[in-house]
Length: 181
Image (cartoon, rainbow, N blue to C red; front, side, top):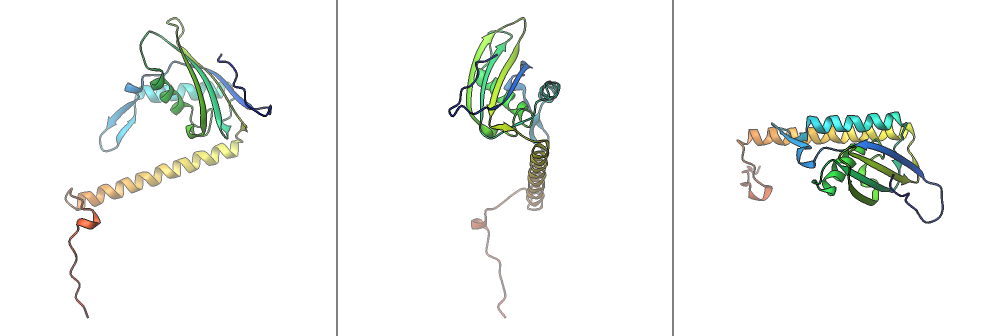
């Protein structure tokens, strides 16, 4: 496991320790979807499910507050970028090890080679673990934001289709004629 993260103040911290499967490449993580932009690939969805399963088996609750993470990535062969691995890993750990990866304030990462057992060893600390109610509330708020974004995107697409595929900025629109009374 990565070395523990020492913080100032000597206060006991909540922690998450996990050994996870090696993530797919960031290059194969997203795929184009007609009319929806980029969506996670089947490989990415399967990886997220395996990370969630591992956290559930370890009875992990998400961390709350600023998160410090130490991770060692054991790759299967001498290729692949460490930063691409971290992006995929952090996305998979959202709502699992922490509520959102925007909480990460320190990331210490190492890369090793281990063809026999590729994996990721993670140690993360924060002030405390989220309660079930906090985690559920965060999940609901995230789903509501996503639904609102989808509705806005669909409204914009409909407006663009009505305009014949051409959108003018407000400053380029022709003035409308109004009859004065």
